[in-house]
Image (tube, rainbow, N blue to C red):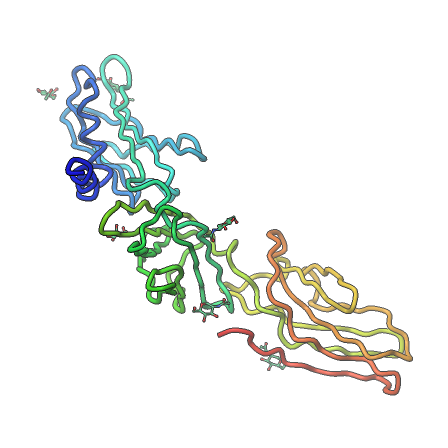
Length: 324
Ligand SMILES: *[C@@H]1O[C@H](CO)[C@@H](O)[C@H](O)[C@H]1NC(C)=O
Ligand SMILES: *[C@@H]1O[C@H](CO)[C@@H](O)[C@H](O)[C@H]1NC(C)=O
Ligand SMILES: *[C@@H]1O[C@H](CO)[C@@H](O)[C@H](O)[C@H]1NC(C)=O
Ligand SMILES: *[C@@H]1O[C@H](CO)[C@@H](O)[C@H](O)[C@H]1NC(C)=O
Ligand SMILES: *[C@@H]1O[C@H](CO)[C@@H](O)[C@H](O)[C@H]1NC(C)=O
Ligand SMILES: *[C@@H]1O[C@H](CO)[C@@H](O)[C@H](O)[C@H]1NC(C)=O
C-alpha cells in the first residue's frame, strides 16, 4: 500500500514532460553532443531546448499517430520550434535533428498523456448555433474516479486568445459541458482541451482541433414566403444568419412539401413549382445545411399556402428564432 500510494503521488506531482526527461537520462547519450534538455509546452505546442555553442539545429519533427511526421525548420540560432495545433491526447514523439560533423543526430522526447487509462473526458463534441452561441459536451471517462472534475480550455489557432469555459454545464457537480455566448476571437480552427483533476488519480486530458465551419449548425431559413399564380407556387426564403457571412453557394436546403426536395443554395433562395389551381391547402418547412458537409439544422416552422377558393393567394411568414 505504502509503495503504491507513493508511486501515485509521484505521478501527480510530476508533469509528463518532466517524467519523460527523467526516462531519457537512462538512454545512452549521443556521442559528442551534450543532452539538449528538450522541453515541450503542450498548450503552446512549442518545443524548446538548451542552445549549444557552435551547433546548428536542422529540423524539429513531431511524429503524430494520425498525421505522421510533421517537420519544421527552426530559425537559424533559435532553439525552439512552434508547431501548429494537433491533438496530443494519443501522445507524440518529438525530435530535434542536430547538425554534427558526421550526420544529423536526432534527439528524442516522448510526450505522453499522463494519468490513469480511461480517466479522460470522452465523447467530446461542440456545435455553434444561432450564429453566436456554442455548446460543448463530454462524458466522464469510464475509469474516472467519482471526485473527478473536468475543465475546458479553448484557444484559437493563432494562439492569440485563450479562455477557460465561462459557463459549465454540470451533472451532479461534475462539469460535462460548456455554454459560450461570446465567440469573438474564435478562428477558423480552434484548439480544445479538456483536462481534469482528482485527489487520488492523475486524470488524462482529451484535446481536439475543430474547425468552426464543421461544427456550425444552421438556424432555419428566415422570411419564408409563398406566392401562387394559377399554375405555380413560388416559395422564397432568406439564408439563415451564420457566424460568418457565407455566400449562397455554401448552403443547401430541404423543402418539406409533403415530399422532400433538395435545393442548391446557388440560385436565388427560391423554388418555383407547378401547382395548378384548384389547389388544396399545403404546408412547407425548410431547413439548411452546409453545401459540402451535410449537417442539417432545425426545420423552420411550417408555412401554409394554397386554397382552392382563392386566386393569387400569397402569404408571408416571419420565422422566429428557435433558441437563444
Ligand atoms: C566555437 O567556435 C569557435 C570558432 O570556430 C571556437 O573558437 C570555439 O572554441 C568553439 N566553441 C566550442 C564550445 O566548441
Ligand atoms: C553542418 O555543419 C557543418 C560543419 O560542422 C557545415 O559545414 C554544414 O554547412 C552544416 N549543415 C547545415 C545544413 O547547416
Ligand atoms: C460515447 O459514445 C459511444 C459511441 O457513440 C456510445 O456507445 C457511448 O455510450 C457514449 N458514452 C457515454 C458515456 O455517453
Ligand atoms: C446550450 O446549452 C445551454 C446551457 O445548458 C442550454 O440552455 C441550451 O438549450 C443549449 N442549446 C442547444 C441548442 O442545445
Ligand atoms: C489544464 O490546462 C490549462 C491550459 O493549459 C492549464 O492552465 C491548467 O492548469 C490545466 N489544469 C489541470 C488540472 O491540469
Ligand atoms: C424579413 O424581411 C423583412 C422585409 O422584407 C426585413 O425587414 C427583415 O429584416 C427580414 N428578416 C430577417 C430575419 O431577415
